[in-house]
Length: 379
Image (cartoon, rainbow, N blue to C red):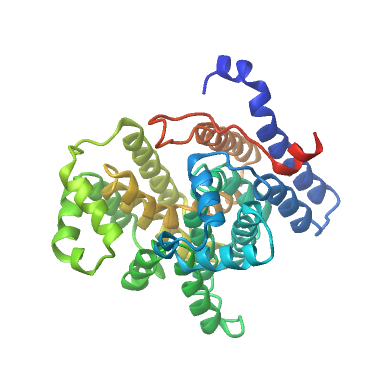
């Protein structure tokens, strides 16, 4: 997104600019007056923006159609949560906007709750969540998976919170809930289970870097071929279709954008590894860093296949709590301001990139034109 595009489309960019400005003003006001009254207005602004959205993309239009035709047999192929919410909200006489609102509320609620499980830097972490295109903006495209990611993010934070009462049953309930919102959460929990000893302990920089560089050199076709050989009989039909599609396609080389994204995340992971410190308090929990590194490893291995690479969304979301912790460790004031400016530019660039989404109907990346149902009614 260049400067000329911004000038030509200032009206289309205005809603997103107002959203970011409103969030920053609420954050500054909370810090200035040392007010704890931040969560309600901040989440309210975000929920107004995303919860009352119109069907702005092809995916949202399909969700709206499935909601209105909720008795159709094809609806059974989706997750239980979609079917349940569709039936309940239809029974209440509400239209598809209620479904969008419900998914948005659940997503934002668990993201906020999850952030508080990992760090005290709630405002900055939530801002980074907004700016990352795979999450907040992705609610306009793939709301089911984004919702599952937020629930899994919150649930994982309970693993090391032994002081919480009923921690285990709450954790298990959230695991089941995340799967009910998107079946890809099953793969996330399987990986977490198999790598539990790895993700809960500190490791040497050599091990981290070896994982990051080594998996970057492995072609995606090797991984998909192994999955097809060993796991395909156990996978649901729709995921077997993804594997067959990949094996039949000529995707030996990654798309330039996907490869660039992979390299950027490898660089970020190496920076995190370099700046980490021994554990001193709950902000220094090893869990977010290890899960993020796992996410980058998954992204490395699946970079040639976009559908499979979305599994990494469950893992790379932990950067929203790692970045603020790393920034807080910078003691020099000038260096901290410089680091904060660079981080701001980096995430704003990602937000700008995320305003263009992939459209299966158009076969390209159109701009995400914002429309709000409440604003439309008031006009």
